[in-house]
Image 1: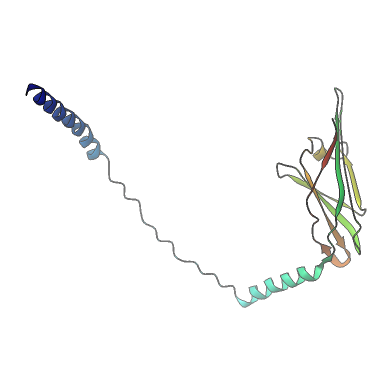
Image 2: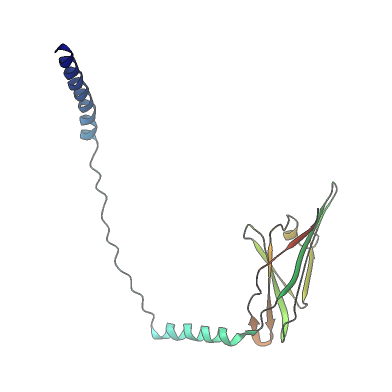
Length: 168
């Protein structure tokens, strides 16, 4: 009997202690009632002039994108490091596109940074002495080529081609 009373007294004390610490906290903490903001539905309807401008831009792009997509034959990168100097060479070659007057070469590193180069040849060659972009390395980088012609004509970018590394 005494044990039951002790347990009952211990339970009552524990409840009293818990409630005595929780009630003041509830009394001091204001209720959280965030403001309700209704976001209206936004409906955008372009006017006729904007629709015509978009249509003309799409038609002009289709009329100008008439050249074939080049195919990259190879893309290589050579890097040599020594105690006194670093040397890096990048080269790429692709097929000739009919009616193309120039090409744009885009080299993209793994961090997403890229640089574009213009050439009139079907190959491109650069070193870290002529361009600092190649100095840090080109591991797992890719290259794409696009053909340009007369009267602002152009073609699609070639497929991404991985740059093969040679050297040590």
